[in-house]
Image (tube, rainbow, N blue to C red; front, side, top):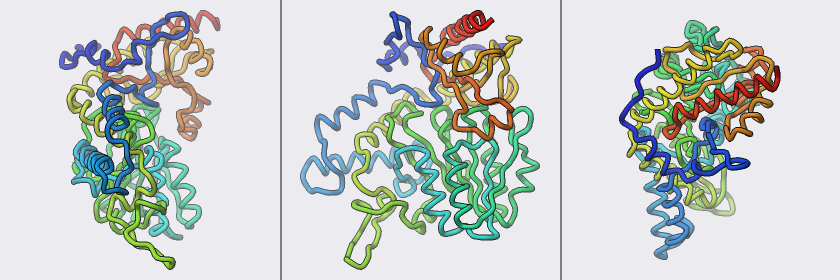
Length: 415
């Protein structure tokens, strides 16, 4: 039975904050944007914050003593504090700005992994990991001679926790886990896995790309050692993300990149490094994007992350119910009634997901089709690709109905 619609969010007012939602596709077809797990849209307050930077104090940070540079530096540094607050970190010394989740995961794999992985040691990943975790850790483990292990999933898309307990042993240096699967929507027991890792003196890295945008996240309560996420999936701009790291870990890690901005002193023979987070932010950073990132956190906090989560859960449940009840549709991930992320991946019998996405596009519906950067997971599911509809605070059940009408059209076309 479908849950009652939450009343705490004024969805129509929220939709008014996102200019792109009023555009049309093709011959005046309203846009139905259901590809939020890839990239969310950007609200006016975030656009305004970035425009204000470009209009009023556009200058490089930490490279000048003139007024514009000082203003830009203060805003950019305080953006770190704002993002730290948003995820429950202690402060800016635990937040490194990156260009996305992928770069954050690579930073841990390379800067931390080079120092700690060696023959006889192991990395534990999961079958549902995004390529942003799978590929960097597989590469660095192979280079350093370490073993890579994978926690399998069960038939309903949950992690096999008994297998996890067997795989995470005293040989393991780090465990990397998606907090929320970008394909299955599974909300993984990150705190339980963190406890397992810490029992064996291993670290844990949480991939928060699908979690931070859709639910309250507190990295201290989760007891993670590292946690990565992106701005463009949480109503912020592209080109900006963050790595949370325990302050002591970031202090002891070597830089990931070298150049201007991340140094304290340079001679012809060598260099010493700036304090965290600057130590990991070489070159001119994404200043406007960092400011927009903080504005996105402000916007989401204004809505209320629990309210955002409740609304998205309601729309997701409605979509899940409607899709599950169709005999020619297969839905992947945890069964109806279990907590899941704000997305539904599915296949329609006789229609390749790429063809389905193309047909839906004619109806103004934007979804994702493909392997969603989880090829090993799709191999385990024994499908080459899936379609994925993903939802955000501005989506409605009426838009899900437009999606369903598009499935009917695709079915008729391929019948």
